[in-house]
Image 1 (cartoon, helix red, strand yellow):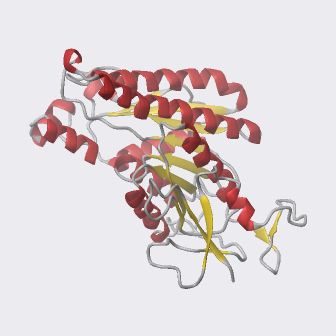
Image 2 (cartoon, one colour; image 1 turned 120 degrees about the vertical axis):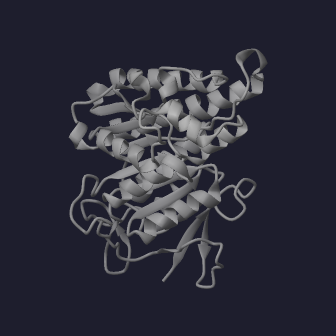
Image 3 (tube, one colour; image 1 turned 90 degrees about the vertical axis):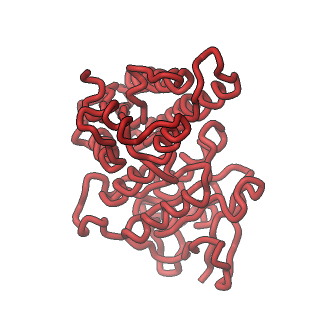
Length: 349
């Protein structure tokens, strides 16, 4: 039996750009196949493209689909078996869940909120494409999804690059048959100085990763959803800084104000296409990014938690994931253009 894995720009990812950890390529739940393992079209017609083409078509010229033998090394990633598709029960006991049979992309999936969101979506039945610039940690998230019984593909992605973002969205179409939910969670926060001392390069990088990336993701996600005729849902991760700035966070605050503006504009632009666009605005959530910012400013965790939450504690990434899944599900079918604060009451003061 032949098998393939996908390896990307070797100058940016030493071992891989994509690892697909479970399932086969094609429509949701894997492609339909005949007894020889050939992929059938959705209507059962004779195949027009091989499995290898299904995968290759999702990637831009910088990526390379490489055939692997059975002696593939431990760093080569899990192999894709060309054969009958397997459907996995969700990690919540095998019943139909809110996202069973649906596909999603999650950016910033290597850690923090993005990782928690990806795991929660997979646990509720979604087939997920994971994207992050950190290839090792992103692949580990995909492995966590697989070990929990889910389906995931990881693509190393610079979310500020249009070509990378387009490849990410097209990979969802090729691997999982479409795109129903986009969760745009990638962000950075590394400021410590007031506006007068903020470097132009710091501002430009923050806007590129936190704001340009959301525009690019929304653009290509909405294109796929509109073309499908089924609509879909987009959830952006904004911030309480979208409403109230913190000291020495001018670039971050500007970027998160922009995310909220894009969310509302997207809701207006694409309601007629059946696409809902909402935002979750986290407060002080215990993530590597927040803990790093606290350390860089020489603050104490307990003091920051008391100041930024009525409960005197940090929120968890799982609490953010629950909010994202509600907004992304049919339970929020009449909700669009909304900014949902998950902030321990911080904005109530």
